[in-house]
Amino acid sequence: MEKTKKTASERGGFGSKLGFILAAAGSAVGLGNIWRFPYLAAQYGGGVFLLTYLIFAVTFGFALMLTELAIGRRTGKSVIGAYKSINKKFAPLGWLAAAVPLLILPYYCVIGGWVLKYTCVFITGDGAEAANASYATSEPEVSLTFFEHFISLVKEPTIFFIIYVVLTAVVVMLGVEKGIEKVSKFLMPVLLVLIIGIAIYTLTLDGAAEGLKYYILPNVKGYKPSDYLKTIAAAVGQLFYSMSLAMGIMVTYGSYMRKEDSLEGSVRHIEVFDTLVAFLAGLIIVPAVFAFSGGDKSALNKGPGLMFITLPKVFESMPAGQFIGTVFFILVALAALTSSISLMETVVSVVMEKFRLNRMKSCLLVIVLTLGLGILSVLGYSEWSDFTLFDMQILDFFDFITNSIMMPIVAFLTCIFIGYIVKTKYVEEEVTYGGKQFRSKKLYNVMIKYICPVCMILILITPFAIKELR
Image (cartoon, rainbow, N blue to C red; front, side, top):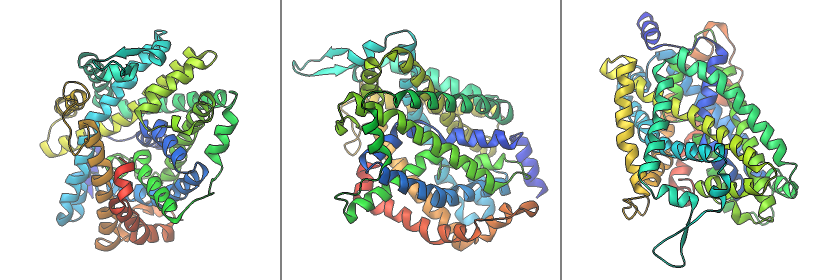
């Protein structure tokens, strides 16, 4: 035990419970909350998806996050060292979990660079160009939107990608308490204020009421058993994005957590913050797009199409749209940055522990790896656009392999490991450390042993999950 405490101290730690909660919530709140959650809610029945997601967030999400935080705090090590110290036979699980942020970080920073570009565009007053610009191609009847033209380039996306990586690295280099905790304490409240303000404004738009109705009221008309199955898998899949699960982040953050702080209470606070931001993002996007598309549900297309093509048109149509657009993309940039910080910190933590390097050297090594892998995603939309992996662009392939395959496998094996190998008592002892109560003990045992493994198998074997959740 003394050795574990010393190791955790050398690696750094959070100075307060609030700092930990805001940092962990910052990790959870990211691009997935801002555009992916609203898109899935829109596609899978609005209120039906919201209710399903909420149920799984307070059960499945709670159980897995509590498990990862407990493992991290009890071992005081990075994700690789943590699993190995518990049971050497499960050391490969730590390596698999560590590989997830290593593969996600580069392409996430590429998308972060796109957000920075749009933030700069709106700050400089060129929001109308982002909404209306059209670029000719070699095919007479085919033109590119502002976004499509931007990502087809090499130089400019690379520059914004590098800037974004540097911004992320600066915070990580400062360490846990002076860097991640301090920045999170500032960014997360600001993000929450901004998103509440924009959501309130959006709901005052003409036509927004219909979008709000669609978004929050369950629509079960014509729902088939297969539709419910798809909604369940979509909600569970979104938990990985929203709560930073099965990628080593919560194990890493748990290793920095103070012993006197309540694990169970901290997880509940993180859940509330994360779900609130995702819900508010839906209040911004779904009613706004609904209002300016005349109720056309096809306008609620996924990912980049919604964030970078549809929304600039929405802002262009709004009174004070230039200002609202500026505030919105600043918000998205903040959300993205808090997530990329946690991704990089997880990788840096592993490098520090495995190679015995200090934080600065570890950060520099991770920067090089991130730039090397990230440039592949940049080129995948430009010079190498004709090159695909399993009919996917390079960035989409990295996203698919991590989120649709690796993360469910990590989650499934973690449940088996804790539920049947070392037993749930391992986590229960950490939760009750210092005489604290474990109020959700029965729920936790059922989720880890039975419900969570079934959910993971569902994600892995359901054909639509591989197609829709990547």
